[in-house]
Image 1 (cartoon, rainbow, N blue to C red):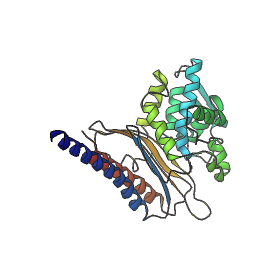
Image 2 (spheres, rainbow, N blue to C red):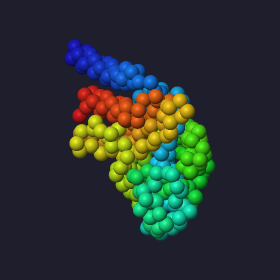
Image 3 (cartoon, rainbow, N blue to C red):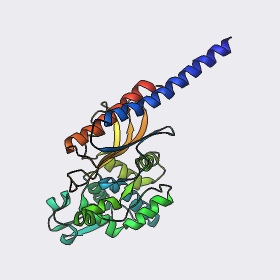
Image 4 (cartoon, one colour):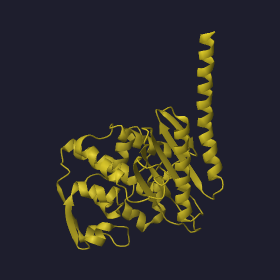
Length: 295
């Protein structure tokens, strides 16, 4: 009799968990249905993956700077290139009409450690820093090869930031599924992509990300840790945004950990509304884990 009672309790708990997992999908689907946009969402925790509209790839935009940094650091780690090595940026490296805090501070060029170049590219989303990494350490094609060899087969990386600014439609040439992006953040946070100073450098840049504070990060409770990278594309001829994204890894104050990727494309909504969509999804996911995972 006691064994039967325990079985019923365990079965009830399992059904509740399954129902909650279904609930998160339903809540997100209902939330995004009110917007004129295509939204892809992937959430990974403890080996379980929740996917919404993930059967396609989405433009990465500047989210690409995260996997690029992994590929570059992997190459430097293999060669033994220390991150305090100095890199020179000339005036010709600092392209006009692109987002670049480095150019604003040093219009004639400058020198800095590789670690600082990575920080500018990831934390500040500096497009010129990103392209300097491409031209010095790892090409787009080699970045794609690294990702595919690592098991992330949906990734396509074939253009630089300058390429995309010269031809906005090229944004579609750097793409991936939300599931692969979330899985890449999960594997990085688990320490399975990089080690030593290379791991610490990328971690530090992601945890100090200065863009998208009104997106994934906004609804998280105080004391949460978030490593993330944002990406924003262009408006096409119909006024629709080609990409507005945020992806990362989160540890809530109670120790719950998960990775999440939210990708928006073809959106007729304003940039502010797109950010609110990402924040709303982040809030739904956070509330779900607070309510349903065992503490």
